[in-house]
Image (cartoon, rainbow, N blue to C red; front, side, top):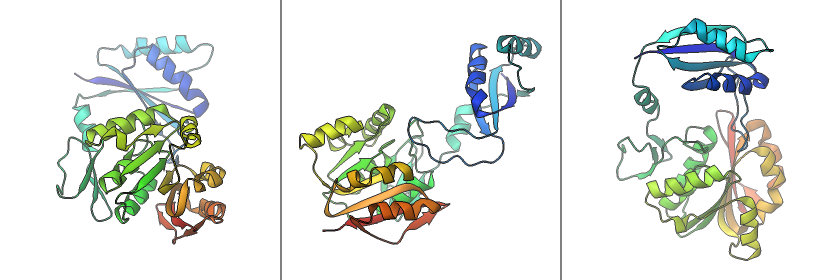
Length: 301
């Protein structure tokens, strides 16, 4: 069995309408691709930023009549004009296998590995997190996540209680637990992230009681009830803007001499973030990777 691939160029303001159009005409899969090698940085959860110039690709069954398909798309898109369309036939292949082959075990620091569930852990004696690519952010491939994992690998976390603010897939919290932390409290404004964190705990045989998760409003209520107290270490891999806005709030969540790890920060934003937290923390030298940085330090006693 083969496939017919339809391809057209568009812009962010038209992409959603065109996706809906293709879905309504029985496209089996739709992919958006950067048409101009423009970076899109890790977004705030709940947002889906797009490139300025987009190539939209859609798959249709091999038996689809290309001429009738284009006629129907043009008709359905009226009164707007459909962008120029390219069509080509793709040979059948094992798409799932090709997708899986893109994800290999990754090592962070000296002893921490992220392994897809279908892969064999390269070092069974190491700390191995089984984590499949999913909807929530955090599979270790983004530099911000890699910077945080490498930092965690070098810390003494035994018996610590940690807050993971912006927990995403739960990757940082699970890493901390497997590295010796007693409990991680996850917070995220995306309900899907809380589900992903719970699922990944199960995949790594972690008692969910060791990784409770909350939406931000629920988290605030737990603090008011004094069920959550200042923590040994706070992790916040989000973005520079929210980090700056939340500086006083996040600082108050860390006990004296407690640790903090901030990431999701571009190199040119690092100084602004550091200054925002400077009244409460003494920082280590900033570490960068591929244009992104992590800022780590300890709460002033």
